[in-house]
Image (cartoon, rainbow, N blue to C red; front, side):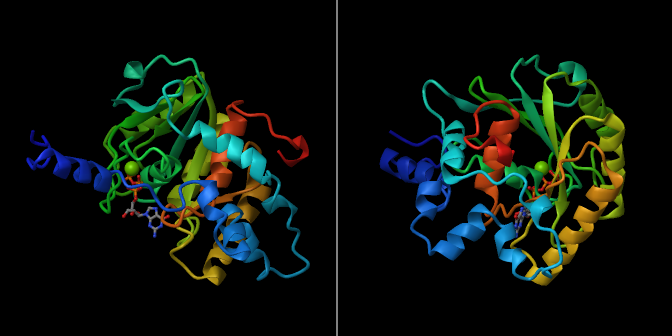
Length: 286
Ligand SMILES: Nc1nc2c(ncn2[C@@H]2O[C@H](COP(=O)(O)OP(=O)(O)OP(=O)(O)O)[C@@H](O)[C@H]2O)c(=O)[nH]1
Ligand SMILES: [Mg+2]
């Protein structure tokens, strides 16, 4: 029998499938436990690596408000593993809000400039289920539609087209009307490129989120791409804007690398928490 994808004998097709869907070696928390403690700590809590560069006078609390333990993160991780009773799948893509699926479960969405790493981040969240296809690209403006992914009956994740360079023509129509009207939306994640820091377009998006008055969270992406000093400077500037210019934004920005998976376990746990899918052991940390 021939594989439909590569027209090789079936054992070849199996190899093809395995190669195409290979799991990142650090996709699960269990695999990170074999790492040296300091490395594991920085993958789980990326801020810990930057902390030593901070002046003693800087208050660290705002950077560690959400600081769950390993057990909470393990509980959250289960929601990102597909099983017969908890199927994770791509559901649909739409260009217009009136075509959006009528889903009842809580929803979270990812917005940000084109190329900031929205689709890559979602792909990293789904690194335990590589069969769920999330398309990423070097070319800005790749995601043209709103893409819905279901995690069983627990919650939905929505990947949005980016704003800025090569954004789809009807971006505003599509994304703004989603943000203004989506009833089951519980959190918006606004992504900023950690290696370049806040840009003018990001501040416009931030203003829009403020206008909406619904809860949102800042995420710094691509933290593997720049030196610690640059990242820390960009993080402090962002945190300052969040502290002084926002009222609906969660005070703690999340740090993410979709390449190393740094910060992914913490973000999985936060999503599971805000969608009401897990109960944290120590609620003082939420
Ligand atoms: N080094 C590094 N590169 C990243 C990271 N996240 C994304 N990238 C790269 O950034 C580029 C854009 O990534 P996408 O995830 O497609 O960006 P997007 O925000 O979905 O872009 P649009 O769909 O165009 O809005 C790709 O070349 C990714 O490989 C990261 O954490 N680290
Ligand atoms: Mg995309």
